[in-house]
Length: 291
Image (cartoon, rainbow, N blue to C red; front, top):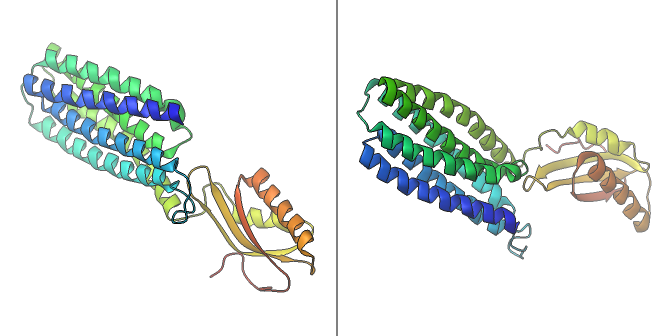
């Protein structure tokens, strides 16, 4: 975890330096594209800082007030970052369209040098988070932010080359729009996944009917009802349900029965936190999902 925090902190410092450098470069070159990219980088620096704080919070111990700890902090950060990403994407599309119809005179040399620095620094930061982003939604949103920054800087470089060689200013806007469309797709995915977790929806890929069928195969289970499955974060999947046993059994037998169910849920469905209410002759007509 400390290794992950160091990578994210390094990315924050790099992004802050890029922002300052692009503001100076944008003023000196007269490039509105660079100033827009600086704004984009500044918002992303804030997003990375939020991600860093969320990870630190998620490491805190559970308390009486927060019995689950602060595990949802990373999901909240991913949601907030995805919203920022989508807002910034629409802003950049608007700016790209404006520059398409109203080209501005700029110093392409300064533009390319500053954009190249931004591209290299953002690419390095994105590579730092690439591996961890595969298993963490919060870091994935931060990674997409950095990727979008890197792609935007690349677009500015290409635009600077076209302006320098052929005075083709509109190609920068075209490339920017194409990149933003790709970023919007990933941003929407992160937003959708984080909202699903926050709304406690059934985790993607879990079939409740299949869970019911497998549990009914266990000796001693008559039926399962009032089933709920949700996620605290990307790694912790919770399940609670009522289990009707086929006969009136002792407490020691009920513990064995619940252990068999928990083992099945963990090995077959990767559900790692199970709460079962064992019953006999109760709620016999109850449905799988309580209405």
